[in-house]
Image 1 (cartoon, one colour):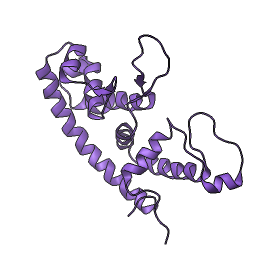
Image 2 (cartoon, helix red, strand yellow; image 1 turned 30 degrees about the vertical axis):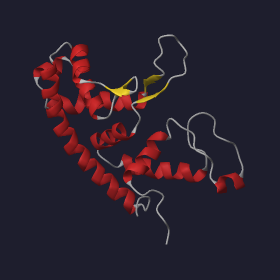
Image 3 (cartoon, one colour; image 1 turned 135 degrees about the horizontal axis):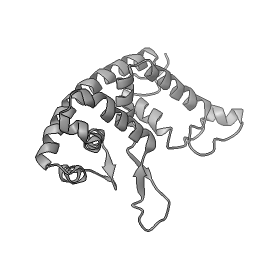
Image 4 (cartoon, one colour; image 1 turned 180 degrees about the vertical axis):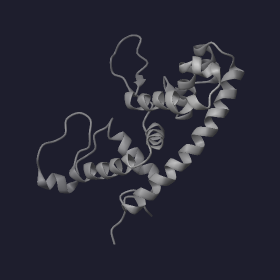
Length: 191
């Protein structure tokens, strides 16, 4: 009996999302076959690329909101920065993660938010980003930092954070279950 490649959806999704920011060692079979080595970002080895392709194909079958929630959850919010400028914090926002958070902040959250949040897209995006582990210089943003950035009170941030978190948590659970079922059916995830 074939053993699944991943023990959990968490491991599979992290593998899928990390492939955008890291190189993986080529498998033994790929070494035997030979061929060119990957340059820059991406997976080394045919088996890793195939697993990533299967995960991506299953992800593509999910509703857009669920797909974006999973990508926001499992992508890194920051990646290392090697620019060597004096102002550099050694971290920069990961563009693929930011795209998902911006979309979720603009599209999904707009229907449940109060008029104040409609007028303050940065507030929405900071709250959604923090829900998905947004880091700033290696640490999570606080209510105070979000309030200062958006020029609102900390109580306002706390109140909207609770409302948005309930909605995101519900959708994330649905997305997680649907993707788990798909990856188990594809025999990529299992015990």
